[in-house]
Length: 88
Image (cartoon, rainbow, N blue to C red):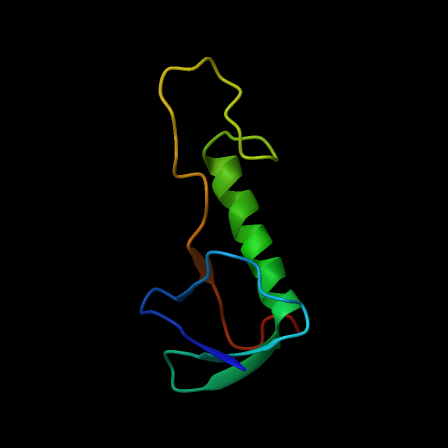
């Protein structure tokens, strides 16, 4: 069992996928806790990553196809938004 704590902005720190079968407990700001599968959090991570890439003009693999003016080494997501009852 992995336990994560929701921060004040409604996010949990998650910088990688978890195994789909692992159970993850999240302690929310309102004092409640929820238990989710690794697959549920992986789906939330993938959605947050897709949103990040769309906002920054990156393609599905995370590459910027514009002419090279600068490099963006921060092509990843470290925080994922969560809420009680997600994935139900």
